[in-house]
Amino acid sequence: MATKVEVVSTETIKPSSPTPPHLRNFKFCLLDQLAPPFYVPIVLFYSAPDDKAAPNPTLVTGYLKTSLAQALSLVYALGGRVKGNASVDCNDEGALFLEAKDHFGASTNIEEQVIVGVQANFFDCGGIGIGICISHKIADGSAVTAFLNTWSEITNNGVDGAANLVTPFLKAYELFQPKDINFQMPPGVISREKLSTKRFRFNSESLARLTARFSGANPTCVEAVTALIWKSAVEAVRKRPERKEKFYLSSAVTHVVNIRSRMRPQPLPETALGNLWLSTVAPLVEANKGVKLQDFAGILRNSVREIDGQYLSALQGERGLAKAYESLMAARNMAALSTGEIELYKFSFWARFSLYKVDFGWGRPAWVCPTSVP
Image (tube, rainbow, N blue to C red):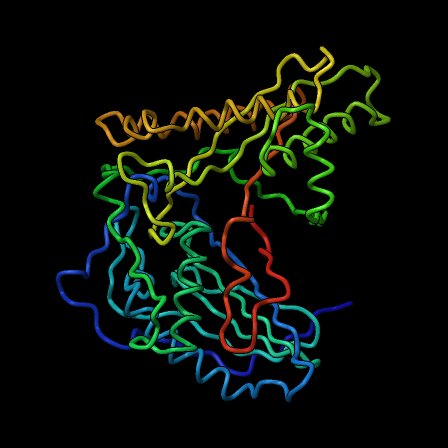
C-alpha cells in the first residue's frame, strides 16, 4: 500500500529560555567525534483511545511544541547546530517540528543541519505517531530515550511539576577528552545498500524455552537471542543453492555495548548525553567443529567482557584515540572480509531503553521502532 502523507505545517521550535553565554559551546567527547554521521530515527505509535474521542490534533501539537521548547532549554545542546567535528554551537536555533496527516505510514526526513527533528503524524483511525530524529554526532539510543522521557514528562506535568525530571549529564568530554581530528568513518562500517526489515517476536515463554536449550550456561536474553540468530544465519548460508562446498564459512558478529554502567569508579547515569557506546567484535573462525548454541553465546560474552573498567580507563588516557580506533578498524576489517571470506552480522540491543514508558498524556505507545539505521 502506498504511503500518503500530507504535511500540514512546518515550524522551528526554539528553546523556551536562552542558553547562558558560558554554555554556548558544547564540546564533543572523543566518542562523539568518532560517531557515525547519520540520524537516530525512532517512531512511537500510539493507539486511538477506545473509550473517548481521539486527541484533537491542534491541542496535541500545541502541547508538544510548548513542552519541546522547555525540554530543549534543559538539554540545551540539542537546540543548537553542529560545528565541524569539535562541538555544538548552542545558539538556540531550535528543532524542526512537522505536523502531518498520515493515511498509512510515517516519515522522519529532516534537514541535515538540524540536530533534532520531530514529526507528529495523525492517522485516520485516531492514532498518533511521533517520529523523532536526533543527530548521532551528539546522541546514541540511550540519550535519545532519555530526551523523549524528559520531553513527555514536561508535557504532562510542566517543568516545575515534573517530579521525575532528571537533569542530564552533559560533560562526557571531561571523561573522554576530544582530540584535534577530522575523523571520517572507515569504509564498510556504514552500509549504503537498501535494507529489508523483518521482525521476530520473542515473548517471555519463548525466551524461557530458548535459554533452557543452553545446557546450564545461563545466558542473558541478549546472548541467547544473538546466539540463536547467529547460528541460524550460519546454517542458512551453508545451505544456499549456489554454495557447492557445504562447510561453514567463518563468521563474526559486532555488538553495540552501552558503557554507562561499565564506567569506574562511578557509573554514568543512563541520561548522560553523548555517544557512550562501543562496538565489540566476536569472531567464530573454526566453524566446522560442531559449534553448539552455547558456544556462540560464550564467544559473544567473552567479547563483551573485554569492555571493562580497565579498557575504559585506557580509553580515557593519552592513547584513547588509538584505543577507540581499534574497535572501529576491527569492524571495518570484518566488513571488508565479508565479501566472501567471512560472514559478518551486526547487532544492537534496545530492549533496556525505556521507550515504552514515553507517555505524552494519551497512554504508552503500542509499538516503538527505528525506521532505518545503516
